[in-house]
Length: 345
Image 1 (cartoon, rainbow, N blue to C red):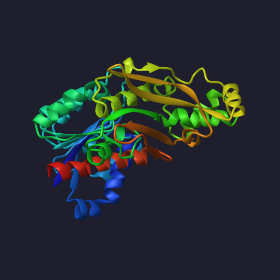
Image 2: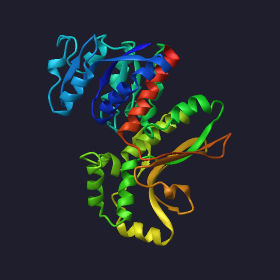
Image 3: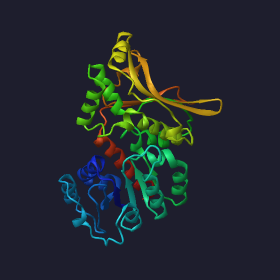
């Protein structure tokens, strides 16, 4: 099956994805029956380019990484593809890969991108948590009605197969709740502060490593973790939760002294995400908590992440991802593209 791909967003993850797919092109064809062309790319900084025959991805990578606009690579009239929605509706692609920045409060504009893609008959693969946190039931049902894919493996824990594991390997199990460390940026910051860095210096180190944005508010104020909590609740626990409904406290008030005091008590402070059922309702919380050094969560440091699920069939199932980054996120997107071919090819 050939996927013609429109990428909305071409930052670190998008570029890592293209490089990964180039490296695995023969394997994708021979083992997974997946051939592909990138026929459209839209970026916030570098403009838009589309070509029915397929863009020269090496030229596109070079242009973006040198700061150039993509206009010279565009082979469609401006009237047909001039913004994200018109690119989606142009007929240039059969698959949307949505990689635009997260808006945790509204899920936009990614939510509208996904709606437009389904209206146009495209499969959807997204690493953007917003559409799943704000429109999961709607998009799931619309995709099913149109026999189109709606996959989102990279929205939580990057390339770790959380949702495919639930979809394929845990059929017949009911998810009762979870405890998790889901934001690798805050985990890295807390680890650096534990070693003596101030909060500001730890944030700067995270930015220098590329694990924190220039504005780290979504991470340090707990929005990213709350959005991931909403995604897990909506998909795995049949909830209908928005990030704004999660009881949320970030790490701005955590001090190096608090971390040293915790260590003296043989504990570590982590930004924990929790969900549990009680009284017929699903409760959620994101907040810094002290965990004992005898707890495996205490050993999850740096940019590592972890989730422990409680199910009616398994008292505990823990998944740990080590050293997450843009490459692991790109792998999760690639795994979803393979699933598109597997289920719809």
